[in-house]
Each structure stands twice: as C-alpha cells, then as structure tokens.
Amino acid sequence: MCGRYTLTDVDGHRMAQRYDFDERGIDPATLGRFNVCPTESVLAVTEPEPRRRAPLTVRWGLVPRSAQVVGKGSQPINVRSETAAGNRWFGSLMAKGGRCLVPADGWYEWLRSEDPKGARVPFHHRVDDGEPFAFAGLWSRVQVGGQDVVSAAILTTAANEVAARLHDRMPCVLAGPEAEAAWLSGDVDAASASELLAPLDAARTSAFPANPAVNRAGVERPDLLVPPKPSPPAPEQLQLG
Image (tube, rainbow, N blue to C red; front, top):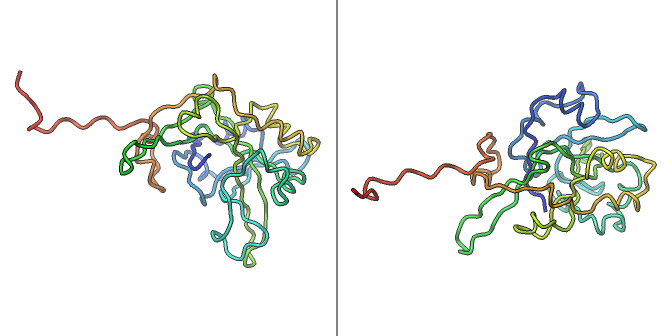
C-alpha cells in the first residue's frame, strides 16, 4: 500500500544526478514534498529513447483511455505487482513503454488504534537511512475532454518484515540504480521486469513515528517527519513535591 509519500530534497541538480536525467525538465513544485497525496502532480522518470531518461510531471492516479472525466471512475494510485502483467490495461503498459520511476525518500503508513474511535498513528518509512530511491511505476498519456492527461500509479507488493508491522502491502521499491535501469529498459520484457518487484530487503527499511498532521491532505512542512513534542501538563496536573 502507498497512499502518501515524501520527496523532501529541493535540489534539482542532485535529483538529476541521482536519477540520471536533464534537470532542465524538472518541475520545482514536485520537489521539497513532505506529504505527497493522490491526485497531486508528482515527479516521474521515463526513458523515451534507449539510455536517455527524462523527468515528467504526472498526476498520481492512473487515468484510463476510456475516462470521460479526470478524477471519476477507476483511476488507481496503486497497482498490485503480482497481477499487473496479466491485466489487459496494466500489462500493456508494462510491455509497451509504460514503465516509469517515481522518485521518493520515504512513504507513510498508519498504525490503527485499538480504540475504533482513536486516531491512527502515522509512521514514515525510509530506505538506507533516508537515501533517495525509486518506486516502480506505470504511466500513460491520454486525451480526456480534449486535454492531454499524463498520469501514473505505484506498484505494490507483499510487505517485508518491517513494513508488515503496519500493513500487509508495501510499495515496490526498486533495489538500486541497476534495477531502476532494468525497469525502464525497453530491452527487458514484462515477465523479466516483474522479477524486479520483490519486497525490498527488510534490513534496508526503517520506520519512525511521524506527526499526525500528515493525516490531512495539503499540509506540507518538514516537521511532519517527526512526532510532535508532548504538551506540558496543565497547572492542575502539577503536584508539589
């Protein structure tokens, strides 16, 4: 599962070096993000020509060719990796240039309270102590109401031992630059690309409590990555020693 994630770096040059694309094509608004939400514009990386990558601003939520209105009907933010290649829509994207990278440096998952009315506690998951990585994604470009719509979804897989503490699914985090190159490559068929979508090694994954303010879409600030400090006790709670 991946319903919120982060891409906190604001340095376009550093991002271009890490993901091997021309920084002149990057939208600065897709960087410095502490609470990326579905339907928002996000950064993706494609390979329009062999061994030439390009940054692309996409809508998070994959829009099908049959869509009459953006935001209505089935427009998934996540796609199950185990069944993607066998699905007519997702399989065609995997086989015909529809694979992309979605750069990130973390994602959120929530611990449900034992009290049905209690608030869920967010946790920020990181890879290699906070280094940038890439989700495996699928993207497409379609016409909806005469407008060009570019959109993407993130593939998911079974959770590793760390992520499974909160959810039985996790995003497909590609293992590193070599796996990212293979995922983008047109020389790698859909069946072989599917082999790249195994759960990330749990030893590379960590999770930390985050600020519950991240539960609200549109909230963007660095302190979302850490839990708030406890409030001081009210005067009536203090006791003289």
